[in-house]
Amino acid sequence: MSASNDLKPIFKGLLTWVPGVQRAFYDRNAGGATASAAYCYGVWLKHLSLLYRSGMRSIPQSILELGPGESLGTGLAALLSGAERYAAVDAVRHASVTTTRPVLRQLTAMFKERAPRPVKGWPDYDAELDGRLFPSAILPDEDLAITLKPSRVAQIGAAVERLDAERQHPMVRYATWGEPEPMGPGEADLIFSHVVMSVVDNVERIYAHCARWLRRGGWMSHQIDLTSLGVTEEWNGHLRYSDAAWAAVAGRRPLFVNRERASAHVRLLEKNGFEVITVLRKIATGGITRDELAPRWRDISDEDLNCSTAFIVARKP
Image (tube, rainbow, N blue to C red; front, side, top):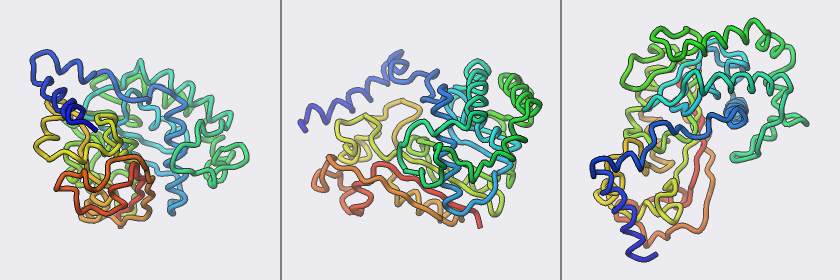
C-alpha cells in the first residue's frame, strides 16, 4: 500500500474539523440496515439460536438492545417471540414511529408464516433450525399461537405508536445515552448488540453499564465487527496506525471504529464480572501482515490479528 493511501484516512479525518464538513461524514439519520424487517428477523433468529446453543433455555422476558439503529425491528421480533418488555439505547436517536411501524407489520407476517431465516450469514446457526429454516424447537407453534394473538400484536403496535412521545409505553422504551435510562439496575434478562460494540468510544464503560442492567443469571450476546469498516483498503488496515494517527483519522466523528480486538472484549467482560460462555471467531485473509502493524499491536496473538468478526455469548453469574 502506498504512503498516499495511508494518508487518505487521516486527511478525511482532519476535514471533519472544518466547519460544516462533519455533516458529509456522518448522517444522523442513518442507522444501519434495521429499517428492513428481513434483516431484523435474521438478526433476532441468529442471536436467539446461538444463545440457545450456549445454554439459554427460555425466551427472556425483559430485553435490552444496544444500538438498535433505524428501527426497533429486532426488539419487536423478540416481543413477537414471547418477550414481555423491550428497551433500547443508542448514541443518536435514529428510530421513530415512522420507521418502526411498517417493520412490525412485516415481522408479524413473517412469524405467522414461520418464514425461513433470510440469509445464512455468519456464524452458521442452521443446526438450530428445522427443515423450513425456522427455529421451531425454540419457538414451537403452541407458544407462537399465544405470542402472535391479534390482541397481543395490537398491544405491541400501541407501544410503537408512543415511541416518539415523552411518555413511552412500558412495553417498548427507547432512549439515547444522554436521556434517562430505559431500564433500571438488574431488570434485564438479556442484553444484546449487533455490529455495535466496535464503534462505541469506551468499551469498558458499556460493559460496566451492562453489568448493572443485567440480572443475576441473565444473558448477553454481541456480534462484533473487528474490521476497519471500510475506512482503510485492507480489512485490518486500521491496525497500522499509531493511536495519535488513528485519533486524527477519527476526527470529530461521534461514532468511529475503536480498534479493540476480540481478546480485549473477552477480558473486559470478565473484568466486569461476566462468565464468557461462547466465543466464535471469523478468520479472514488478505489483510496487513504482522510487520505492518503499529507498535501497539505488534505483540497481539495470531487470533486477534486475523479475526475479522466475533460472536460472544456471556452470562452474569
